[in-house]
Amino acid sequence: MITFEEIKKNEEIKTYIRKADESLIALGYTEHSFAHVNKVAETAKYILLTMGYSEREAELAQIAGYLHDIGNVINRIDHAQSGAVMAFRILDRLGADAEDTATIITAIGNHDEGTAQAVNPIAAALILADKTDVRQSRVRNQAITDFDIHDRVNYSVKESSTRINEEKTEITLTLSIDTTICSVMDYFEIFMGRMILCRKAAAKLGLAFRLMINGQSML
Image 1 (cartoon, one colour):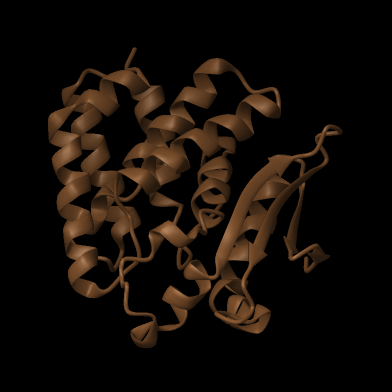
Image 2 (spheres, helix red, strand yellow):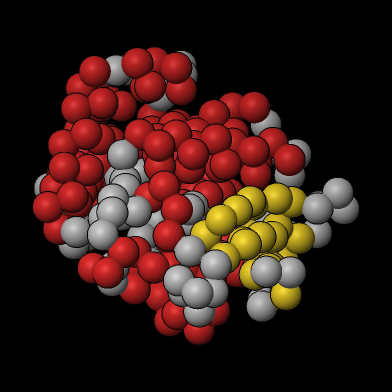
C-alpha cells in the first residue's frame, strides 16, 4: 500500500514538481512548487477527515494533492490530464494498488477549471484545496508596479483560511485583503469560475461553499 510519506520522499517526483514550477516561472505564473502542493495535500486531507472519511481516503487525497500539478512539466495546457498519466506511471512502478491508483489519477485528471468535475470525494477535496490556496507568498514578482491582475489578487491577501464549520454543513474560504492593492471586483474577475467550481465540489461532500472577504459574505 503506497503511503504519502513514500510519495513525498521520492526524488523523481520532487524533480517533476521542481521542473514543472520552473516552466511556470518562465510563463509568469504564481508559485506552484512545494509550498503549494504541500498545502493542497494537507487541506485535502483535513477536508476528508473532518467530514468523516477514512484515514486511507484522506491519505489518497493527500497523495493526489501532492502530485496534482506535475503535468505542468509537459505543458500548462491540459496539465491535469498529462499529470494524471504521469502519476499513473509513477504509482504503477511503485507497486500501488490499482484501486488506489485509479482514485488518485481520477482526482488529478479532474482538478483543473476547464475540465474539472468532482467525480468522487477525493476529487472534490482536491478541487477545494487547490482553488482556495490564495496567498501573498505565491507571488514571485517583487515589482508591484509590474503586477498583473493575478499578482494583485494574491499579493493583496493578508490572511487566508479554509475551514469547515462545527456542524459540518459549510466550508468557508475566509480572506482578508488589502483593497488598495486589489478590489473585490478584481478578485471575482479572476476567481469566479473557481468559486463556482468550489461550490460544486463542496456539494459533492454534502457541504455549502461560502466565501468571506473582509468580513462580508460574498457567496
